[in-house]
Image (tube, rainbow, N blue to C red):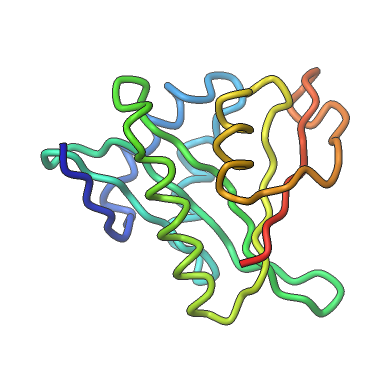
Length: 149
């Protein structure tokens, strides 16, 4: 199965929202939020295609905190039937490359503390847990991770 990574545009909104809902259920971004992110100048959005179907996507933004720019992964999704095939790894590596090209030296993200497959993936790729986020996902706690690019 060949996976191609391409820029995600507003044209893909319906499919991206469908995958977001499959992946996150009640915690999913709304269609309007995804549309905003896809059209925001500060956003990098990528889609993974397999056999011309969208298998997953990632959205990151460049943010500034205390005069330091960093990449913030807003959401990463892989359709349930396409998981465990390296798609999330490919999306993360590609977005990190694009952030580095913009001069960004750090990437951050949040994950639900009980999402063990995602945590393992992030740690394998060099992300380190730097904090706990109380009730970040409703009643569920989150973890805050960082990686130096």
